[in-house]
Amino acid sequence: MENLTRQEISINLEVMDMLNKQIEKEQKASSLYLAMASWCDQKTLVNSASFFYKQAEEEREHMMKIFKFINDTGGSAYSPNVSNITHEFSSLREIFEMALDHEISITQSIYKIVAKCRQVNDFGSENFLMWFVEEQLEEEETIKDILDMFDLSGDMPLQFIDERIPVGK
Amino acid sequence: MELIFSSTYYSSYQSSEERCYYIDFGHKMVKISFCQLLSLRYKAKQMSTFDYIDNLLNHNDTVLLSLCDKEHLILLDTLMVLDFVDLMKGTFAMIELNAMLVS
Picture: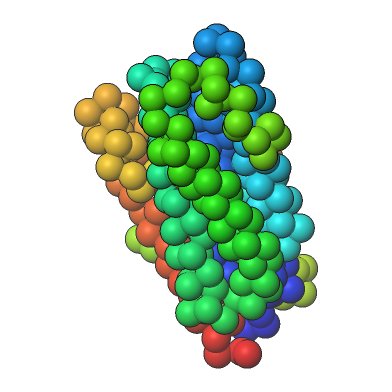
């Protein structure tokens, strides 16, 4: 039987399913960062709010990048349904710790897709994901640096810490 | 037209000449593109979740399945839903197997 499917789609179907799940994760991260930005904004933590607004935009860009890739390679991307986003946080430090945990889980998820690409010889998708591997390491590093700054600041007022948050990453 | 997979009630076919696929629902033969087949695969995945089957068994007995950008509507009962899920799994497994044999 002629391999009609290969002429229609250039990526592996299992990889496509994992990328669709990744779309959901990136969108969830974007929504979570938006909730964090809102919390910071309400407490006049201007730089932290700007930081999370920018993060929310970036996660959405990541989501769109994957979405477009799936459709461009002949697959079918599905618009994510995101719910259960928490808007309650106890402190600014907790927010950054939660953001780091979230970034780590996204990094691990990207690694799993790369591993799958290697297993099924989907080199096109693997090559596409290399940008994400690099990007995730940068994202983790940025938040780790901020948490280090929290440690160094000791019991300094929140306003002092907020002034040192890198605006727009 | 070549048979890809047959489940208890349904069958899927590939037409290399027309560069499309067919699904035989018993009372109706539906011509579909690859994109539409992917869309059916997605629906079958959603239909195979525990919550979906649980809801089907306890609250609804039937499902209206729309195909090919709402061109066709098929009424399925619980057994037919499970069979449709089997058809999609089997169809894509055979497509993958064929790809390995051809390459």
